Structure formats: structure tokens, C-alpha cells
Length: 583
Image 1 (cartoon, rainbow, N blue to C red):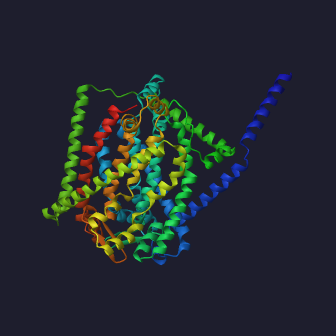
Image 2: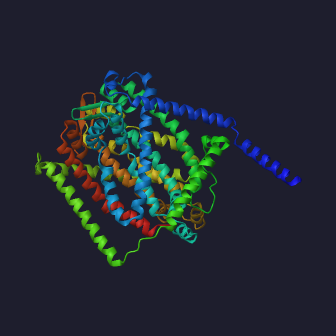
Image 3: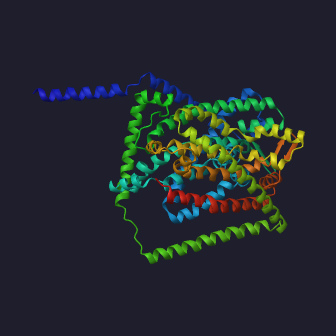
């Protein structure tokens, strides 16, 4: 008679213990207050973005520093919205390219072209579309700005994820095969964790890249259409137009505060959390830490909700995994597969020919061969600039990135500084560059060149840091055991280990440099304008004049240069790293 009563008491005790474990503590209160503040700020920003378009003319951007908190909020919301879309794009496109040979042959060249198209090039064709999508509403202009920022964030994240999926260690692949994991389970249990460290560093670089182009994204001027959205980017553009050094300094200060906040509240916790995905046999002695992550781990209710969401995600994943396990695999013969390949190649060639003919037909309406020769010549000049600057940036930032990546504690301290430097808009330096060139009568073709690499060299640094940070400690100890030092250590150990990451960084830096040339080869300070010869200045002048034919010609020539360079150099290095240097 006493057994049922005992069991009932035990159930009550278990329920009480569960409730006690999930009962909010003081850390829950802190986290809830912080989340509430973030939600209120997001709701305020979202409401502002839905105002009528006429409100922008009634309340133009002002250089009053008191407006900077509002501008910083709106700019940050746009950048995180673009980052969210970039992450979604990455998780859809990169696996398709990595797992399907046919998709890879379409997606990778398309990404090469898209990453080389300047932000202004996208704005030229998308502003009108989004404004017509939401007529009379500020939301259309907001979406155009978010799309422009997206185009400066998505490509390097996609390339990083693609590179990680192509270089998953073979022994881990064999383990997943022995456990008979489905493609869904393999993706979430092996491939995503393996790719996470590199993807996290590229997300940070994407945020910084977004800052670099935020001036062009918020102060939209295409032909007769001029829209200035309230934000830090438009604030900087107005300060440059008015030659107000003090306002530029206020904007840079606001940027620094915003970068410090999202580094502490978001990226540093993610970096500390992702450290558990390192592929190594020896545990790290100095793992990265985050006070926000420690705070979250001490909460009770948040942890309980997180556990519940994890179980729901597991149930969903289990269902998908079961479906994928029972899904019949398509089986076709070799002859049919070869015929499909030939049809695919024919269709692909037809699309390329159609696109080339469409561009030719559009351009030849008003332009002649002399314009083509001018665009190609300008492209050659910009090509030389980009390659020289990539080589110099590699010599500087590869050793620095390896030094930082091998020291997690140093990486913690350097991380926000690197993000700030990477986010530093080149436009802020325009006053000093223009005044220096005019005062000392310097050659703009030489002295404007460093501005091209100013915002893109960080792709190399961030990717090398990511590669060095996941360098297996056991391999490091083995190299010490064999007394590998100096250049031998670099040649035999470190350079092969980081090569896939370096190629990703150099490839995106190269594409970003072509993109940056549009704002760096033609700069102005007030009514003083200095211009270097190159394809970026060609496109910038055409965009400002509303000459869409020259814009299309310039973007087309730039795409040919970038795709050719990627095919000849960077893709071969990718293939070499995958074939010879895979762990």
C-alpha cells in the first residue's frame, strides 16, 4: 500500500525540482531586461522605416550630433537585416555549389560576377524596382539600401562556407559513413560545425564590409533620383559635402560605439561558443571567453527555453532525417548521365551567349568600339592596381593573421579593433587624401590606389585568423617535436594549413577591391574632386551621369576581368588545396 504513495511523492519531488531548476534567477532578469531593450529599439526603428517617403524631405538628415543615436540605430538595423539575408543565402547557395557539380558550374561563376559588381551598379537597377514595389513609402528605399548592403556582405560568407564544405577532413567523413548518417544529419552534425569558425569570422568581416559601403547605400544618388535615408552613412556623406571635419569625427565615434556593442553582445559570445568545433585531438589551453556567454549559461529560464527549442529542432530534424533516409536515390546509367551533362552544357552555353548578346545589343545602341577599348584599357589599369595591392596586403596580413590566430587571448583583444579598422569607411579619409594630393600636386593614379585596398585587405586578415585559430594543436606539437622552425615551418606546416582560408580571403579581397575602386578612384571633398584613371572611375562617372549604357559596359568588362582572374588563379589554388592539402 505504501509503494504508490512513495512513487507519487517521488514524481512530485521531481516536478518540484524541475520547476526549481527553471525558476528565473537574477541572471534571467538581467537577460530579459536586455532583450526587452533590444526589442523596443527594433520596434522603434522598424516603425521609423515605414514612414511616408515625403517624410525624408520634411526631415532631412542633419549634422546635429544629437541625432546620431537615432541614425546609429537605423544603420545597425539595416546592416543586421542584410546580415540575416546573407546568412540565409549562404546556407542555401553554398551547399548547392559544394554538393552538385552542375550547380557548382553555374553558381561559382555567378558569385564571381556578383561580387565584382559595384554597390552603385546594383543600386542603379534596384532602386527603381524597390520604390515601385512600395510606392510612396520609405520602406522601398529601405529595402534598396538593405539589398545594397547585402551585396557587400553575402559573397565572402558564401565562399567561406563553400570552401569549408569542400575541405571537410576525410577521416570525419568516414566516421559519418560508418554511423550511416543521412545527408541531413551529416550536414548539421559534421559540415556545419566544421564550417562554423570560418563562417563566424567572415560574418564579422561582412559587418565591417557593410560599414565600408554604408555611405553609398544610404545616400542614394542615381541619375535624377536622389534619396537620403537617415543613418550614419548619409551623415558622413553630408559631412563630406559640407567639409565638416567635426561632424566626421562624431560619426566615427558613433561607429566605434556601435561596433564595440555588437562585438561584445553578439560576435564575441559566438566566437567563444564556436571554439568547441575545433578539429583537434589536444584541448585548447586558452579558449576564448565571453562575459555575455557566461551570463547566459548562468540563467535558468533561458536555459530551459533553449533546451525546449533544442528538443523541438531535434524532432523536426529527426523527421526530415527519416524522410531523407527512406527517399529513393535516383539511379541513372552512365550513358544517360553523359547525355544529361551534354544537355546541361548546351543550355549553359546558350544562356551565356544570350546574356552576352543582350548586353552587346543594349550597349551598341549608343556606344561604339572606341568606348569598349576605353573600358578595357581602364580595366587593365585597375587590374594592375588590384593585383599589386593584394600582393602587398598578403605579405603584411598573412604573418599578422597567423600570429593572432594562434593566440586566442590576443585574438580576443584584437577582434574589436580589427572590426573597427575594417569598418572604417574610406570616405572618411577623402578630406586628407584630396587635400594632400592638391597641396603637394601628387599623381592621383598612384596616391588614390591605397584607398582601394583600405576596406578589403581585412578579408585576408580575418580569413587567415580563422584558419590559424582552427589549426590543430596536435599538429603544432608534432612540428615542435620535429624542431621545424623558420621558413621550413611556414612552408611545411602553416601555409598548407591556412591555404584554403587564405584563398577565400584573397578571392573576396580581390572582388571587393574591384568593387571598392568605384568609390576610391574618384573622390571628392566639398567641390574639390580628384580622379584616377581606371574602371571604377569610369563606372562612377557613368552612374553619376545616369548613363546606363556605360554603366552596363563598365560592369560587364569588370565581370569579365574578375571571372577570368578567378578561373585562372584562385580556383586553381582552391583545387590544389582540396587535392593536396586536405587534412
